[in-house]
Length: 138
Image 1 (cartoon, rainbow, N blue to C red):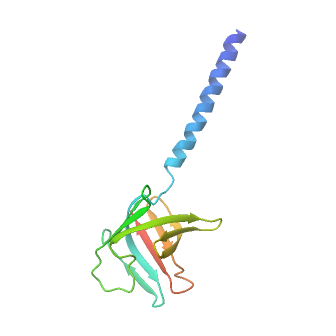
Image 2 (image 1 turned 135 degrees about the vertical axis):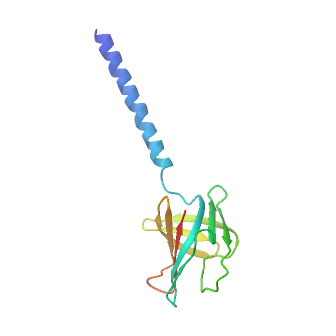
Image 3 (image 1 turned 135 degrees about the horizontal axis):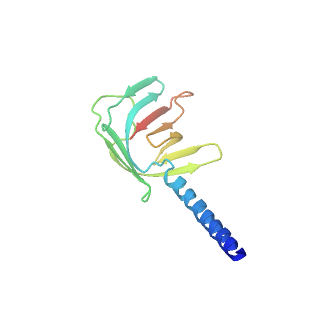
Protein backbone atom coordinates (compact mmCIF):
# COMPACT_ATOMS: atom_id res chain seq x y z
CA UNK A 1 0.00 0.00 0.00
CA UNK A 2 2.81 2.44 0.88
CA UNK A 3 4.53 1.64 -2.44
CA UNK A 4 1.35 2.61 -4.34
CA UNK A 5 1.08 5.93 -2.48
CA UNK A 6 4.76 6.73 -3.09
CA UNK A 7 4.40 5.80 -6.78
CA UNK A 8 1.33 8.05 -7.14
CA UNK A 9 3.19 10.95 -5.46
CA UNK A 10 6.17 10.50 -7.78
CA UNK A 11 3.89 10.43 -10.83
CA UNK A 12 2.02 13.52 -9.67
CA UNK A 13 5.30 15.36 -9.08
CA UNK A 14 6.56 14.38 -12.55
CA UNK A 15 3.35 15.58 -14.23
CA UNK A 16 3.49 18.87 -12.31
CA UNK A 17 7.16 19.41 -13.20
CA UNK A 18 6.67 18.81 -16.94
CA UNK A 19 3.50 20.92 -17.12
CA UNK A 20 5.27 23.92 -15.55
CA UNK A 21 7.99 23.87 -18.19
CA UNK A 22 5.55 23.87 -21.11
CA UNK A 23 3.66 26.92 -19.77
CA UNK A 24 6.82 29.03 -20.11
CA UNK A 25 7.16 28.04 -23.77
CA UNK A 26 3.57 29.05 -24.49
CA UNK A 27 4.10 32.49 -22.94
CA UNK A 28 7.19 33.16 -25.08
CA UNK A 29 5.37 32.25 -28.30
CA UNK A 30 2.59 34.77 -27.63
CA UNK A 31 4.85 37.78 -26.94
CA UNK A 32 4.42 40.62 -29.47
CA UNK A 33 7.11 40.81 -32.15
CA UNK A 34 8.07 43.07 -35.04
CA UNK A 35 8.28 40.04 -37.35
CA UNK A 36 6.07 40.37 -40.43
CA UNK A 37 4.29 43.10 -42.35
CA UNK A 38 3.05 46.35 -40.83
CA UNK A 39 1.19 49.25 -42.49
CA UNK A 40 2.08 52.81 -41.57
CA UNK A 41 -1.28 54.41 -40.70
CA UNK A 42 -0.30 57.74 -39.11
CA UNK A 43 2.61 60.19 -38.94
CA UNK A 44 2.40 62.85 -36.26
CA UNK A 45 4.68 65.69 -35.13
CA UNK A 46 7.59 67.48 -36.68
CA UNK A 47 8.29 71.20 -36.59
CA UNK A 48 5.19 71.83 -38.76
CA UNK A 49 2.96 69.72 -36.48
CA UNK A 50 1.73 67.30 -39.14
CA UNK A 51 -0.89 64.63 -38.55
CA UNK A 52 -1.14 62.51 -41.72
CA UNK A 53 -3.21 59.32 -42.01
CA UNK A 54 -2.56 56.56 -44.56
CA UNK A 55 -4.69 53.64 -45.71
CA UNK A 56 -3.47 50.12 -44.92
CA UNK A 57 -1.10 48.88 -47.62
CA UNK A 58 0.08 52.28 -48.92
CA UNK A 59 3.28 52.19 -46.86
CA UNK A 60 4.34 48.73 -45.65
CA UNK A 61 7.33 47.78 -43.51
CA UNK A 62 8.08 44.03 -43.52
CA UNK A 63 10.45 42.97 -40.72
CA UNK A 64 12.54 39.80 -41.01
CA UNK A 65 14.06 39.04 -37.61
CA UNK A 66 16.29 36.28 -38.98
CA UNK A 67 18.11 38.55 -41.46
CA UNK A 68 17.69 41.69 -39.31
CA UNK A 69 16.34 43.55 -42.35
CA UNK A 70 13.19 45.53 -42.98
CA UNK A 71 11.78 45.81 -46.49
CA UNK A 72 9.90 49.07 -47.00
CA UNK A 73 7.35 49.43 -49.80
CA UNK A 74 6.28 53.07 -49.96
CA UNK A 75 3.69 53.73 -52.69
CA UNK A 76 2.51 57.05 -51.27
CA UNK A 77 2.02 59.52 -54.14
CA UNK A 78 0.91 62.47 -51.99
CA UNK A 79 3.40 65.27 -51.32
CA UNK A 80 4.03 65.20 -47.57
CA UNK A 81 6.71 66.40 -45.18
CA UNK A 82 7.55 62.91 -43.89
CA UNK A 83 6.09 59.47 -44.59
CA UNK A 84 8.73 57.22 -43.07
CA UNK A 85 11.36 55.61 -45.26
CA UNK A 86 11.49 55.38 -49.06
CA UNK A 87 11.10 52.00 -50.74
CA UNK A 88 14.14 49.83 -50.06
CA UNK A 89 15.74 47.21 -47.85
CA UNK A 90 17.34 48.40 -44.62
CA UNK A 91 19.33 46.76 -41.83
CA UNK A 92 17.85 47.18 -38.38
CA UNK A 93 18.49 46.32 -34.77
CA UNK A 94 16.59 46.73 -31.52
CA UNK A 95 18.63 48.06 -28.62
CA UNK A 96 17.17 47.45 -25.17
CA UNK A 97 18.19 49.60 -22.22
CA UNK A 98 16.79 49.71 -18.71
CA UNK A 99 14.33 52.43 -19.75
CA UNK A 100 13.85 52.18 -23.52
CA UNK A 101 13.65 49.97 -26.57
CA UNK A 102 15.37 51.71 -29.47
CA UNK A 103 14.81 50.64 -33.08
CA UNK A 104 17.77 51.64 -35.24
CA UNK A 105 17.22 51.51 -39.01
CA UNK A 106 20.31 52.61 -40.93
CA UNK A 107 20.64 56.28 -39.97
CA UNK A 108 17.25 56.62 -38.21
CA UNK A 109 16.76 55.99 -34.50
CA UNK A 110 13.29 55.57 -33.00
CA UNK A 111 12.01 54.88 -29.51
CA UNK A 112 9.83 51.75 -29.77
CA UNK A 113 7.24 53.11 -27.36
CA UNK A 114 4.40 50.62 -28.02
CA UNK A 115 4.50 47.05 -29.31
CA UNK A 116 1.41 44.85 -29.26
CA UNK A 117 0.25 42.04 -31.51
CA UNK A 118 -1.65 44.53 -33.73
CA UNK A 119 0.08 47.90 -33.32
CA UNK A 120 3.47 49.45 -32.79
CA UNK A 121 4.51 53.07 -32.38
CA UNK A 122 7.89 54.58 -33.14
CA UNK A 123 8.71 57.96 -31.61
CA UNK A 124 11.55 60.35 -32.47
CA UNK A 125 10.37 62.88 -29.90
CA UNK A 126 7.20 64.14 -31.60
CA UNK A 127 5.98 65.84 -28.44
CA UNK A 128 9.23 67.46 -27.34
CA UNK A 129 11.02 68.62 -30.52
CA UNK A 130 10.86 68.29 -34.28
CA UNK A 131 10.77 64.47 -34.36
CA UNK A 132 7.97 62.30 -35.66
CA UNK A 133 5.74 59.61 -34.23
CA UNK A 134 4.85 56.76 -36.61
CA UNK A 135 1.95 54.42 -35.88
CA UNK A 136 1.75 51.01 -37.59
CA UNK A 137 -1.02 48.39 -37.70
CA UNK A 138 -1.12 44.79 -38.90
